[in-house]
Length: 154
Image 1: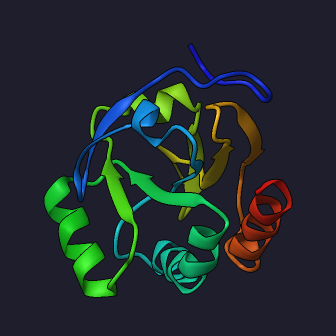
Image 2: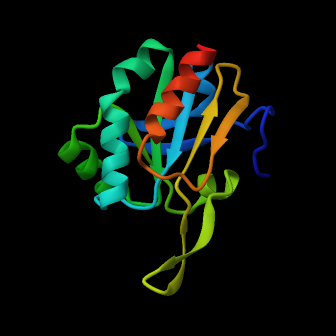
């Protein structure tokens, strides 16, 4: 079952850099769930740095930021430590969250078709309802757009 706007997102649990995370445990908080293709790549690093730079503003607005990719926990732990990210990264090696949010797409890389994560961000309100989604995200100004929306509903 995939998600849809203005509908409750079914509970999920996943391993993160802080241990197991459950969506239901975050009830009352706005959840910004951003999916990115791969740790330690230029676009994904820039996106993470942008979220980190605005982290205090997200927190003040009552939002929890979580990054998701298919990378291993070891890779996430290293990436988070290296970049000093103040938010957790979720490892989704079996693609269960990726499938739930329908972010796995065929993409062109160097003229080859590859299956990977389409950079996407989802905003889940404090009641667990999907309020907004950004798909096919371009990194420049994306975090500012997400923050503005979070602040408008906080």
